[in-house]
Length: 577
Image 1 (cartoon, helix red, strand yellow):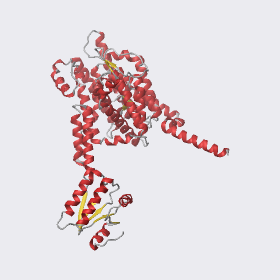
Image 2 (cartoon, rainbow, N blue to C red):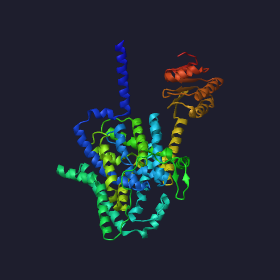
Image 3 (tube, rainbow, N blue to C red):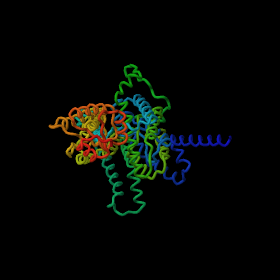
Image 4 (cartoon, rainbow, N blue to C red):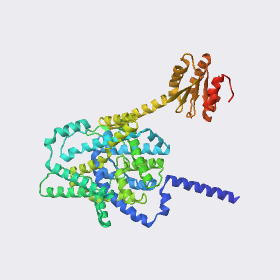
């Protein structure tokens, strides 16, 4: 009796541990962690950390938040993803697109941005637990590309005012374009010169790094290649440090020629629940319900875009480095990161393509590299915040412009034109509408893609051929939107012909058939009987044949081949195939 009981306990324990490993992927790789991995993870974590700090400061500007909120949002992802993530390469944190979306929803109000992070995380975690990741499949590639191109233009042009040192420029894109050009005479010489120098240096270092990977790269020693790669990879940090030293030097001599970041909160953020209400400048208290109502469609859009961006990055690097990810587990990791991040004043985050690429290229071996990156961010918050006072806004603007420039991939337009011109419609709608309101752009693109998808379902391709009887070959499954179209085609080309013609319906591509289609076929069979012609089904798949037989259609005739159906029409006999 003991043995079966022990067997059941052991089996149950294995099952429980297997389930636990599925929810906590760290249990899969931590037992086989090696010392060599630690060396590579340390190197990757430090390198990504030196990239993360200046980018986080810059992206907070895009979100319209004080710069410290960028750092508040940059450290929680490293800890959570180490426990829950399934990709060794992905780094979670603030990104240009999420920062833009956050600003479009909360308008630069820190308390609401933190609450938005909590709500987005809850939605994302719920989607993971309910296995709803498939919903992301309904956002088509043209919509994503249209949005990212528009976001790159919006974010990039939005930083021109900081390069020029302009004040009082509206954030709405069209007004921003107008007032940026209108206020060019007010540009500050110091900001313009420093901004252009930073931009030029970043571009030069980026080209140096890219040249190392090209086949035409000049021969050089291994040490010099590593030195150039390290300098080019840490270009953002180097530019910020150099620009800050320049601003500090001029300020020390009493020359305030640069627009600088100014006072920032020093130290780590307090760990506390996010606020569920807000107080306006005039003392009016805004309730939780009113805040959520104010978020509008952004509350659905931001979680979706965060998941889409991160999972696309994870899949790309998993394919490149020969491993697999669990999409629903990735949803959970992002959701929990945003939930926990809201307790340390973070705004919504997702996977960063640029920092993930740096992580992968540095040779990271496990998600533990994210812990090192997070520690660097925490050290910056604790000890370096006073130094951030002198960071010129023009240098952060140059970093942002260089970061979003690769997102403007307009070559995809030519590719879509060659492959399927109709895909340009959701691309153009998304691209143009995003300049009005970012969330409306994505919603409009998804709506157009949905209409195109539904049109293909409602108007399936029907290939016709004349073999004495009319053979109609259906190219896809039949569902209720296609019912009227199929009936119209049969009536127009067969029943209303003079004389009426028999039809062979070739269904070998049809895998589904719903009740509405069956009801319409019942009426069509009756019309064929009245006209004294035949409607014969051929090459039915077993599942579809089972549905037709269960419907008990009067006059149903079917064969296993088109040739047999044509013989049946020709003979005019009723054969039981």
